[in-house]
Image (cartoon, rainbow, N blue to C red; front, side):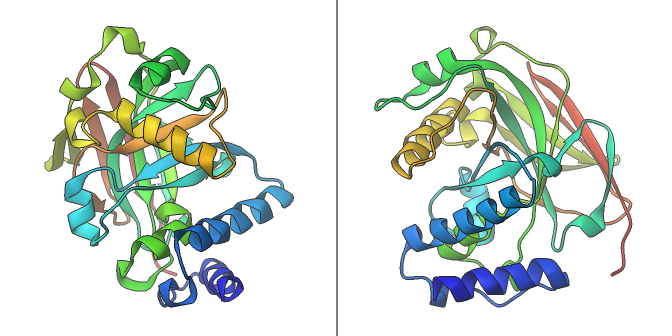
Length: 258
């Protein structure tokens, strides 16, 4: 049944047509992560490179929006990333939404048996403002935790800011975020809205990824989770996020149609 879940999600990606939920095909979250890993392995065999991870559902407002009650994580590949200011063809996605968050870039592995915020800080080279374009291959975003995990934690694309900041200079819990669509303020939040502290979210990821046999490695980018509610993306939209003490990041969307 897990193989059928993989086939259903693969068809949705290939045909650019969202599919029915896959949760009825998966017995537990371990099976869902196995489906995710199968997809990542297939992309790797085709030449894609893993460049990091994303943490999903760390913000209670986002969990309420999507009806999911626990965090998860997915994998970032090299062809998902863009620099700040990029123009992105919305046709690369199916049902895109956007969120602003803090990205950690690791200087060292995070693979030890005990990982907390102090270990995360010691292993982090720097942080930057980021935008994640989340996307679901499940029709209507009708997802449970099993659906989103199998679907690579609803990962789509990501955009990294170009103003690196050292963690020792920051209290991430106190950082505030504003996200603008053009001249309209569409989302607000703070570092404390992400797992209480974005470094706590990364610590959770490090522990969970290690337990699943794929620990975080030096050089990886970690998207630590949304600082505020997610916002739908439309062709022609331009988004600009400001995260206090960290920096800014922007992206615009082109395309449309089928």
